[in-house]
Image 1 (cartoon, one colour):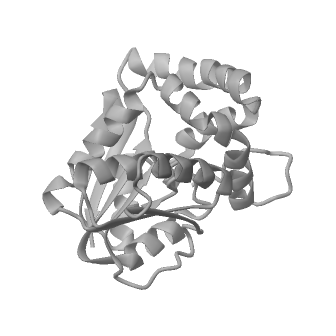
Image 2 (image 1 turned 90 degrees about the horizontal axis):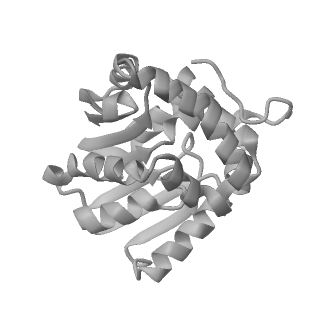
Length: 242
């Protein structure tokens, strides 16, 4: 997988650049997320979490939790005993904590700064680990996935929601125009950071989606891996079992 960097002239490594980028855009992140996806991102999260309902997870880790949208929705839909959300961006976590506090969920959802490639948890600690729109930001994809595998209990589940590339005409062409032209323009207008919203389509383009990502998950050790494409393939849900 090609290493895509948000700030190409920076001397920092990808992990440092991703943390810096999310710290910078955190004040406008939620607004832009919902605006740029026309609110469809909320539907994607619901569909992904619905796939976990039958497992009734009680202890969930939300990797790259950002502003905790997935964690909050998971608490409402799945009602686990506890969700721990981790992220390398303190700016994003601060906004997530505000939302959690306003909703009165501070005892149920705990957010902490941590690196997805070096998780501060014991082996076999969670029955479910979930990631939404975060794995393509891992500096070392297989290292991050191996850490996720390590902290999941035997028979536990991983659920990964990530952007993919539509292949059907004319959705493919419309998506390419939108992601490569309109998205960076609007991102710069609202967030004042054009590089961040150029990085998004570039990172999606480089990500080994679909069958390729399923094979990587299987290589890590996950079994019964499935991929469900949403919205003509703009987004995909991956599920696997330890």
